[in-house]
Picture 1: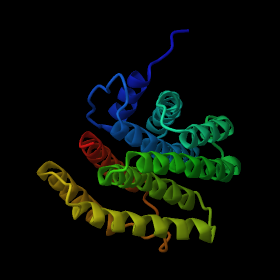
Picture 2: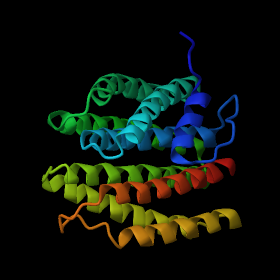
Picture 3: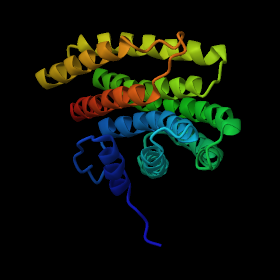
Picture 4: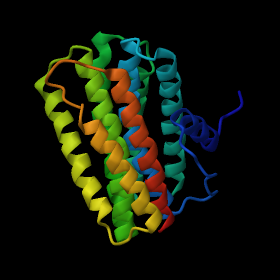
Length: 259
């Protein structure tokens, strides 16, 4: 069977997200490595979101395509990152991600059902934490303030999908207080980081303009993101957060290009 390249998978995933993309370089730069490692965090959360979305039969066919593209892209980017030699700490952290990836993939790729949703989420949390460690190690190795901005902007992508999957879990009638507190923390973290990014001295006029657009989208989303009233509108929330994901993915690439 012909192997599909990471570039091809990325193009498919970003097409599903309506994200414009440039062809990646043959060899990763540090900026692009931080970008890709950060995107892995987002994919863990997006996979959980699509699993819950499919389980509730909400835009099922779109969610199914997004799940497959996300699973494929995570595997492809993991292989790319393993080839990017930095130091032994990064190598060990990547090995840990590989160990956690196998059981998560097995759970998340299965037929979605409510009984397994929390197991998928828990496995995804472990993979998220391990993936985040790689980003932090790469940022430290870069030794630059721009590396921190790539990390922070990339984390906004993850937070958009984290909010989405937590919202989907609540709409699926999971009432755990942890999900509500995690959701509120994700909202607060996104808001705080957006302010930091908008005031970063490294910003170009193009980045400033793009961040202003995200602020406008975020303000609109914030008007109706309350979980407490029990009136869930998952399709609307998913679309709103995906728009923010698209914009933050572009901005993360802009920061990566500055390195």
